[in-house]
Amino acid sequence: MNAKIVRDVLIIAMMRSIPDLKRQPLFLTLVGLISALPLFFIMMFGGQLSNGLIGAMVATTGFIGLMAAIQDIAGDRYLKIREIIVAMPVHPISYAMGIALAPLIISSPGLVIFAALAIWLGVLTFFPLLWSFIILILCWATLSSLGFLISTYLQRASIYTLNTLSNLLGIALVFLPPVYYPEEMLGSFSWAALLFPTSNAAGLIRIYAGLLDADVLMLFARWSILVTTMIACSIATLVKAKWRES
Amino acid sequence: MESVNLRKIYRNKESVEALKGVSISVRKGELFSLLGPNGAGKTTFLRIISTQLLPTTGEAYVSGYDVLKQPDQVRKHIAIVPQDVATYGNFTPWEYSYYFAVLRGMSRHEAREYAGKALKAVELWNLRNRTCSTLSGGEKKRAIIASALASNADIFMLDEPTSGLDAVARRSVWAILREMVEQGRTILLTTHIMEEAEMVSDRLAIISKGKLIAEGTPEQIKRLAKERFRVVVEGSLSSLGITVNNNRVTKFGSRWIIYLKDEDEALEIVRTALRKGLKAETAPITLEDVFVKLVEGEAE
Image (cartoon, rainbow over all chains, first blue to last red; front, side):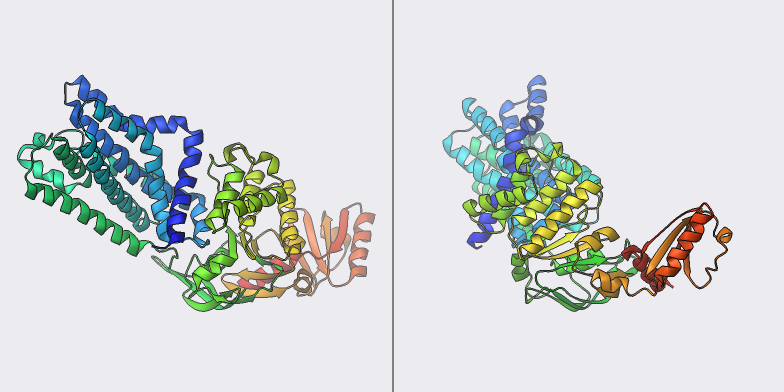
């Protein structure tokens, strides 16, 4: 990856995040609130806030990454901004990564608040927090690539269809699997947590936080699945990331 | 900029041949307009030549680079304004120009300089820090044109840049385009507004149903018609007692347009009409008249 590609990733990420950060405080609040909302119900119904906080951290990065990858790329196509960028000396990978990185920047205030809360409540200490960030980055990369692939495959779908699809996928990947709640609650189906990058990431963070028991083999299996999924989605994105239509 | 026998077939549920072997050559430093009715293939041509779309067959070159084989080189030399492009509502004109200039590889210092120049050129400097959501349609369009101008590219490709603008905004865009040409830039423009093509183009091509049907300066194109003058008469032609069988006549309700080769003949019809109390006037044939004749001829 050459310096121009990396530079362009950062420029696109800045372009797509700084105006929002400067002018859309309500949007930032909404981004944080979407992830924080389940915590309210967890507390109301006497659930474990520690599990909820980990879920909120995963949702902040993963859910936003997936939604933005689909909605921003569809939006750019709708506004014809994408055509302007295609006709520039910009690599498609820079565009895809820049679009994916922007929501991470936008969601970073929310992530910092949730991480600070997790430390304050004793859910995470320094090293588990460090592992958590690595896991969250992998989860974000996986879901952003997935979002990019979906928007690329569904090029002829309308922006409304893609927006609805991204919300449905967000719900399917963040709110249904054991992201906000411990996977033990699934009983004999707890293995299903490994199938979703979001719940797998949440499970891994819980292991490092001491909330979930796992032997070395299970830890290895979880990391392998998370990394493999991320690599597979990224490779597919690299292959599909073509500027020119045929 | 040159295209050689460009063909494009869209293969969806049914195949549509959008371009049927279009060869066009645009000279350095000229404003070349691609004129055609809706669905003629103008946008397809522009999307191919601006490296966004692959042709089915044919070749295209921009600044000496092969559009098919060297798209990265081509992209360094071009800037485009797509048809019906919209703006991010939360962006300011300054952000458009500045970020797009940086994205093209300029340093921050250079980007600031070119963004400033571009915004002054399109007279948006005073509005540079207002968000696009608060700008008028014409101002938004000028913000997008400024972002292309800030690129300092050699070649600009604009797809119907004045569509949806009022007459005043349209003329301000024309002034910007001519200014760009005077600064040595090459412009490829698509339009279906005849007045625009006539006012701003050095040369133009008429494209219809994917085929090139005429190419030349506006004056050369106008000479393609047999007639030189038009007479517009309001009222019944029969009351004039003139024979129009040999002339081309178009009727819009009670209004007639008569196309004639000879100016004296045109003036005589006007005089007769005025004597009979009808409204009448004559003028040289317009590009639109020729365009309609050519396109209808093609359709026939």
